[in-house]
Image (cartoon, rainbow, N blue to C red; front, side, top):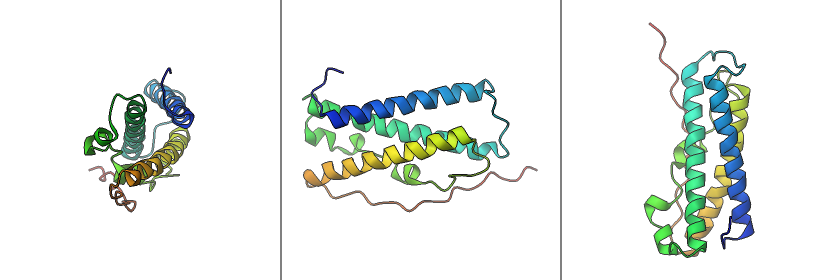
Length: 152
């Protein structure tokens, strides 16, 4: 990548990008029918696909900010601004639909792996925050998402 960022950051960035490509490929195959049967509850599957997108977006954004700091493009203070911090914790920590029968197995696998990646980044984010004297963000309990309304 030609950056001055530490190896571990580059490695995590490559992991995130590989997962992002897998998510894209899954989404493309889901749209074209890719052999997956129709979900018993498409609302749950759609919601979880958005959760996957949210996790990956947050992770890649955070990694790009950290790379910018290591490359001298941003200061640590700029990186600590609320808009540049890891966000959407309540959504991204939630794993209440893991193993849900309405979530296709390939999507469930992506969700599990994206949650692990998000949690890894969350730990790094907390270390960065502590090193800058910023109070840690509160952890959110998993919030059960409402199910789709009954069809009329």
